[in-house]
Image (cartoon, rainbow, N blue to C red):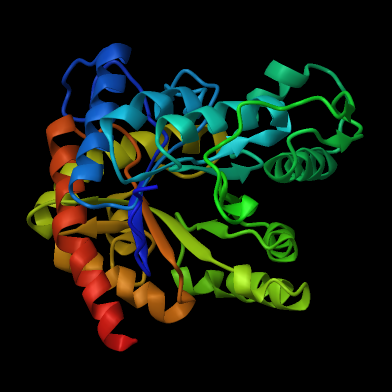
Length: 357
């Protein structure tokens, strides 16, 4: 196992947005977009970032429906970086298959596979895979998450549920890279958006929580972290509690260059989703408020982004920060953003946190 450990993880999170042109108007094919993602992951590893996470969607404006497939392609191109989904939609998948897929990624990467499990921010996978089967949304997710957690500990599980055929001791293979603690074999983080019950669930189960903050003022989310840590404490899981913050962001050599380069990609992505959900179109004024110190966007030069991570740390005392660039900024600009995150932002943040501690 060669993955280095830091007291504070910094990494990347991508949904792999897709359209025929990037935000600068350059033509891009699906093949080239995926090739770019492999290059971005390889660079993230080379500049010392800790995590590269890939989302799952089932829409024409996102390119990855199978994170494990993409992570398997990334595995031999990298040496140290943790490879995670973000998120795996367990409710509309078979936990046995998800386990097998990520166990394969784990073997290919020498023990670097992770999962962020979540209930999905879009609904397309539910009619696609469940059809008209009646289900309770929360019950469905809880059952499948419970089975996945059981599979980490048992090769021949006995299990019975409502939404999947029973397991009566059949072997589930392959197994991931063996570690001293089975819970470290394919670590599972619980992805949480705006549902307090999800924060409580993560604490009760003793799972790390990945909290998405993509709008509003970050301190408004402090209640979620308090719920999570209180639930973990009450369940005897305080020693397992870990918190990650996932937010949108983009870095350039100057803050003005970052702001100007990222705005077309951000405007296109937020506008597209907003039209579906009834949100007002994104304005330059709201964008500027969001990349201010108390906003949710991490857009700026390395010093500004590092300052913002440290500002949020004062509120959350979190263990991990993943930055996601929505939309499709030009590939060269994304590569520079990744380079700056690894070579400038991460050392600034880690050095300052070490000094404080």
